[in-house]
Amino acid sequence: MPPNNQDRQLTDADVKAVVDALENRFVDRFYSDFGKGVWSVVWKAIIVCLIGIAAAGYIKGIK
Image 1 (cartoon, rainbow, N blue to C red):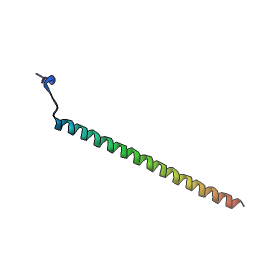
Image 2 (image 1 turned 60 degrees about the vertical axis):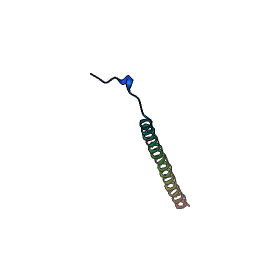
Image 3 (image 1 turned 180 degrees about the vertical axis):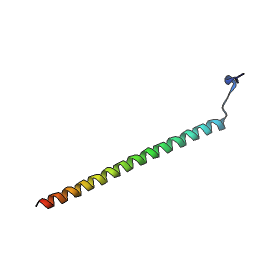
Image 4 (image 1 turned 135 degrees about the vertical axis):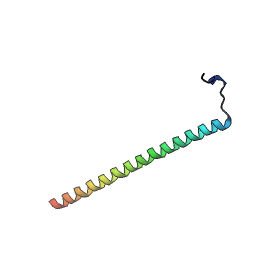
């Protein structure tokens, strides 16, 4: 016979454990996404610099 779920109650320690776990998960995901965003910007800047150097070399080669 399944337990009666209506009689279940969470203690303060249970609530604190759930909140701490959710907070840790939220912070981990936030910094993971933040890091991906930063690396994306850095990668785009590197590509723009390389294209700029190539364009400058091409222009100097024409003159």
